[in-house]
Length: 264
Image (tube, rainbow, N blue to C red):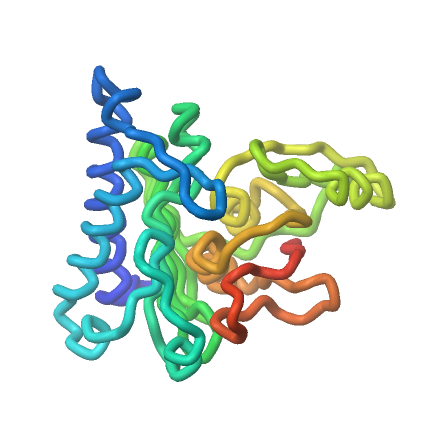
């Protein structure tokens, strides 16, 4: 299946943001240029987050599709929009310019640029770019998802992952383990292998068939998951809260996700 032109445009914006991030990541004076500060929720903020944010916002505003270009943008690095305004949005862009800032600071490569188009609470299009790995995931809900791996020189459509084998591959956060996760794992009814990974790459691993289960029993924000959620939806998978309801966006005042589970 051919990629829609609008998806190609969002991919280009994500790659441009990734280049801005890598300009700091690869700088000899990385520690100085990263300029780490702490936000109100105690999460880290670097100059790379801000540069990527501006590249994305400018890129979205310059889209050839004027309706998409005019949509509101909700980004982790922009001023939060009051619920009284957000609740009127049927469509909007949901962005995390640098997901996995802790991984960026550690320089382990496991961070991403996330851009999603949300329509009536559902991520209908998403792009996840891991600039240090040069891997670009993209997807359209109900249609298809793709992976462009520049290091391997491959670009292919992702297929629906196969059911888990005898050993369950459970992907989890490299930086945010919790007692709830340990409790969950203790109740699995088959052998498992825990695969640590940072950022939204955990969700993309399911879409790529490299993991079977991702239980997120810790706090995340909506911009952390939406783009990779779209990639997952493109291969026919979904993410559900602990009651079994599909994960949805912009349905409440808080921008925090409930605990959720994604599985093949």
